[in-house]
Length: 146
Image (cartoon, rainbow, N blue to C red):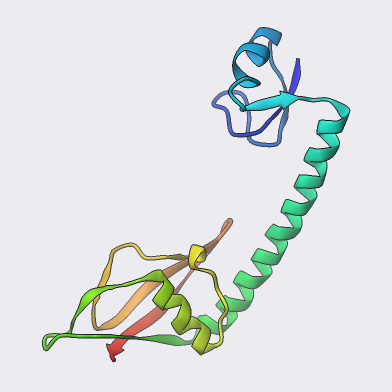
C-alpha cells in the first residue's frame, strides 16, 4: 500500500515522502497513529501544495538569514545588561535580548535562529550561533554595562 508519511518514521522514510509499505502495517500502525495517510489523488495534491509553500517559506528564510549575516559578520552587536562590580550579570543574556540588539544594529533575525551554547553571564565578547535550516554562521556580541 502506498502511503504519504506525515512524520519521520525510522527505517521507512522521512516526512512528506510517498512510500510503499505492507497493507497491515499501514492500516494497523501508521494510519491510526497519525504517522501516515493513504496516497490518494486528493492527498497527493494537498502534499504537493504543502511542499510548494514550504519551499517558498524556506527560500524566504534563507534570504533573511543571508541578509542578516551580511550585516552581522563585520559588526560587534552590543547588548546592555546589569553587571555587578566584578563584571558578571545578574541573569543570563537571553536570545530575545540578542535579537533586539541585532535589530538596533540593522539585522532583522528571529529568536528561533539564535543559539547560545552556554549561558552568557559575564561582560565582554561572546560568540553566538545563527542557524536557519542548513545554513549556520556565527557572529560576535559584546555585553556592556547598562
